Amino acid sequence: MAIMEPPASARWTAVSSGESGAAVFRRDDGAVYAKCVGPHGVDDLRAERDRVRWLSGTGIGCPAVVGWTSSASGACLVTTAVPGVPASELPSAVLLRAWPGLIGALRRLHELPAAECPFERRLPRMLRTAEDVVRRDAVDPDFLTDEQRGVPPPELLAGLLRESDLRLAQEVDDLVVCHGDACLPNLLVDPDTLRCTGLIDLGRLGVADRHADLALLTANARESWTGDDERRADELLVETYRARVDPERLRFYLRLDPLTWAAEWGVRGVRPERATGRRPPAQSGESTPSSQGPRSPRRCCAPCADHTAPAKTAGGPLWSPG
Image: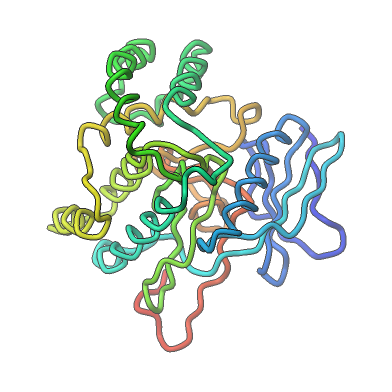
């Protein structure tokens, strides 16, 4: 399927393309990225553009929209790069040192006034999406948690619906501005200071139960922890997030999330890498963080326009990939 081309006024290098139905390009100076889609992807890309534009005005670290074009052939979104490396690239011991900063960044997002956010993905919307995906038999088994595999998707959905009244009642008092795909590849870290520099891949941002974000972040991080680091990370979550975390609600949203992604990548948009942490092969010559290539099959959305800038190395980084 033909897609929109990036602006001709600059030199671009293709970063990723393929099953998502989108193509991502990096400008040669590394300062901006362009995500281009065909006609079927315009609505989703426009929604992503609006979310990036809104969040960039709140003081939360994230890309900024610097260009948008659309026509009958598709659309192209151009955003600034965010400095740093994806947290998913950090080894366990380094990730543990960065963990309080990552939790703090998510907490600051959740502390934004929810009433001022024009986007929402509350539980009724998530359940409707899950019902649609299941009805079309579009659930990708690779995105399911280990306990979900082998269970027919209608049974998985029925189990969630049995809990829905309780979760809907709980959601009312816990609505925050959620990232919507808050897994490690979407949180960027300065390799010198291990400070979280920003959030990327914002196509699902909206008001929701905070546990929807926390479930993905903690489940994704489990794939990185070694030794005793997971226990310490759980303690730091409680200490740093500064609000009660309900394990049962984490489990509910972790089971719901895989049912909200459809398998028809070219129709439904970017392919997600969700909570199992399984990672498909990288694009040739590219790493697999966040929007720079496919992520692990249940963890986060793959190619998007929210890309990372080259990490600084002055002063000797605390950690360096490769």
